[in-house]
Length: 93
Image 1 (tube, helix red, strand yellow):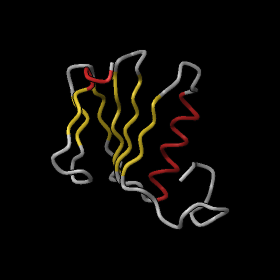
Image 2 (cartoon, helix red, strand yellow):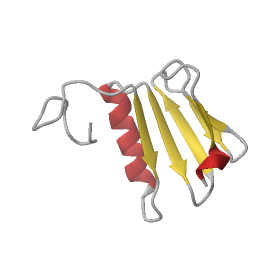
Image 3 (spheres, one colour):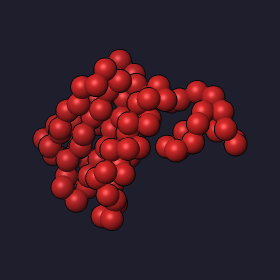
């Protein structure tokens, strides 16, 4: 679901995915990214990964309001959304 659209409107399904992934571009604005994340979580997304290839970091946002900052030595973890899935950030760059 695209932030800013309501579920079920104009071609968008009436449900949210369990996982959303945002790969930041050099011109992405932090406030706009945080707004997207908030909208996804409000829509029912359980886990959001934000990957910043310039800083070689990742952030994980969860439906319970917790978040984690990851560095290049850490891995994205599917947690209870994708049990058993891990992807070391270092493999992304």
